[in-house]
Amino acid sequence: MQPPPDTKDWTWTLRRRCDQCGLSAGEIDPAQFAERAFVAAEEWVQILRSSPAVSARPQPDVWSPLEYGAHVRDVYRLFDARLAQLLSEDTPTFASWDQDETAIAERYSEQDPEVVADELEAAAQVFVARIRSLTPDQYSRRGFRSDGAEFTVLTFIQYFLHDVIHHLWDVTGQQDAAASLALE
Image (cartoon, rainbow, N blue to C red):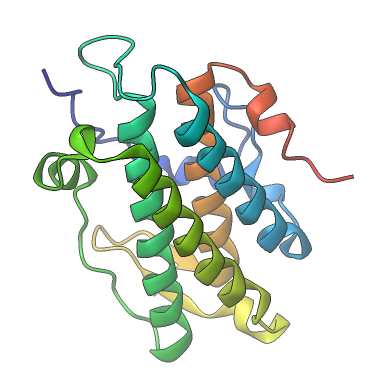
């Protein structure tokens, strides 16, 4: 049984705190972007490498930690490609991406958790390096999702952070997973 498709428009997380994971994505300071993206990836790598039930679904219609981890790996890859697009094109429109279709086509549930962990770590290093290379004037560059939602580089990275941190909550069930990413 596949989880039901996620058809929510999660852009609201840029305007208010997420009641589930506890993150106020729109309040994240750009100075914290790279570190938060790195720490979230490391949390995911640890889950993939140490969870004894990494491939077990908690319910038939809920992804396993492995499936979420493979999705998060692909989120790092996709957001890196889209950030590059934001930086190199004037007001790009991003192609539609069906995460549920990708999970089935790429057989997330059958992937090797060690390989996914390695690939996620590599994807995160590339994305974090791109974030670190940003200059303040680049944060206002704009782009559009295929459904018309508008992002700037600033809101695009905040949105990304909510996605990967929220999925930590999906797997752990603890808001502490998001709170532990708060930098002092």
